[in-house]
Length: 492
Image 1 (spheres, rainbow, N blue to C red):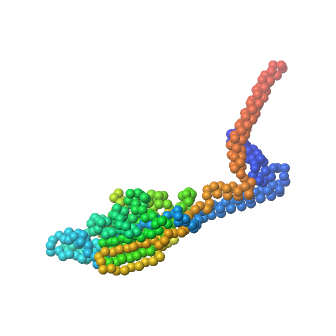
Image 2: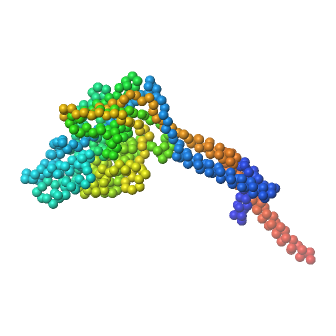
Image 3: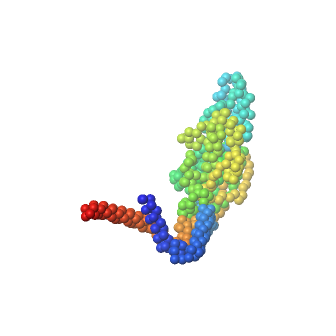
């Protein structure tokens, strides 16, 4: 009985809603005074209108998801705007013509007796483990396999590679001779902060990965109309590689576009660059990263680095691939003191070497590839465009190396990433489509909710009340009949 009453009330409210709602054409379908052909005509029109609105809304939402961001070029006011010199990274590189006293002392310590000769193959093996630029495919076994079963010779160590790397690589004071900004000397080791990368231990100047921006270890290198000169001169005592990069980037073995080597003694290079900045409107953060196709440095937290960048993402991707494939990672992948990742020993390095994961191909950074290792990484939203417009090199009769990085001129324009369609635009557009095709508005929604909540409840209560009254009337009639029958017999 209750189910029947509910269905009856639902039918009555549906007829009532269709007859009185504000949606265009619905009243003609429910009105029985019209001929069935006319009602069928209006039903077809309603179906076409709703179908058309659905298709338009679907197309609009797909366009909103894929094309909600635009990048435009805007002019800068040189009297007000200033430009910051890009971040610089420096990594020590291995150089076969250079003597490494600390490494020789380590190998001397591997000798168990004075009769054992110094093993130069072990030295070559250690150089390729400590300095990534000296590594070549298949070099792990080639230097060590012949000494595996030898009892009276120096063998390759099978573990402890992180501490060997720390002992051999130069610290900041050993690596830098002098640093100058626009001819003025500054403390190299105060502002070049250490960081662990795929290239081993490196030093970064003005990087948000190592220090707070404009904090005590941030060296101000601002350029403006009043001071347009921007020259950074770095002198080194060992073979190095310098990286010109964005402040959220780190040196990486696969990112070589802005990498400059200073290997032989007396080598001096000059690098001329231009920088075009990018700015982001605040509303860009409200759009998903798959739509804007970039990630802000403070959005990504699943990493041992402080901030996100494309180079950080590729580093994490390579590290995860090494652990997944060989159950360990290269010792250069230990990113910080709290990193408890398994470090490869000799067998693990052989595994990485055989599967080309020590120095993989740059194709891993192509997201459209499906074979092999794929790193699906977005660029940083704050990534500026740095261009090399010239380069000079020379060799001088001295023991050190130097690199001069010079920014040519101040940028007159910059990029701006902005929102094309905001959330309010979605509401307005969808409302306009529904209003055009169906006559719907926000009051139509209120109307629908009212009919199928408040009025439906009233109909149910009315149905129950009417059913109760019918039952009571039936009981009274039955009782009257029962009372009347005995009286009739008495009269007889």
